[in-house]
Image 1 (cartoon, rainbow, N blue to C red):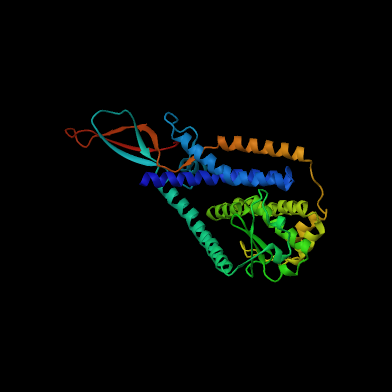
Image 2: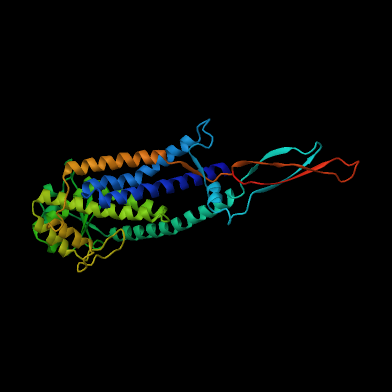
Length: 374
């Protein structure tokens, strides 16, 4: 059982290292190389999923017979090399009898392994538990609010039937609730709209909002967003995960805006709908977007739709850049080692001194050794 727990902790550490590197690559590429949201979308998803696979591969490779310490980073040994003056040396005392002065060797275990493991485990699990509990509490509160939602129909909303169909032609259930500020895609085939406020929109604006949320359903964004939020909560000590999750949600809104405009054919109606819901309630993060701020996501989306951000690369060049970044990142992740905190034996050598208590007593050899390098 102890070995199983130690292996799980080592895998978590490996996952954290791989995720940090993957997210750093994705954030840098999304900032300076890939500018189109529909291509960055693949980048964010890969940064969230690829470290899970690469850490499992690294763990499997590390356990192959004959591999030894190849592909494994022993964390206590690395810390001892980085902080030699701050960490106590590894020492051992051996009592030997018989023989004379000779060179002796022995194997001892790295004493830093267990303390490091306990400290890292608490440092990872306690913040993850607190953040996860807060996320669960918010989602449960939102689910409780949604229980009062009521079903409606496209005819009552004044929306054409084709506006509430997915790409595959599957009908979408439309509900109304006071718990949402504008509209929200729920589950696999439901769109919940704000009661009262949604009814005040013009018909084209309603169609645009519905098409936007149906696009989220087509892309399975509710599941992806839930996964991103869960990973960001579990790995709260790695802030890059949260940054990737935030950018994924932002680009998902951009992509669904584009889909809604192509489907409805009225960009101004979509902008008017965004303006009407400028202070929309975000059910996932309880964030109120301030329309008067230039940093508001509503402002960014409206400005992008109206052409304020038209500096786009061609689809061909963006696709090539995305493929190159993905291939390079995957190759790098596949080469990353497995991080281990398990106690590792190290060889120590020293000269043995013979100590004679009396001429008739057997010789006692006392060996005081210090490990200089693992």
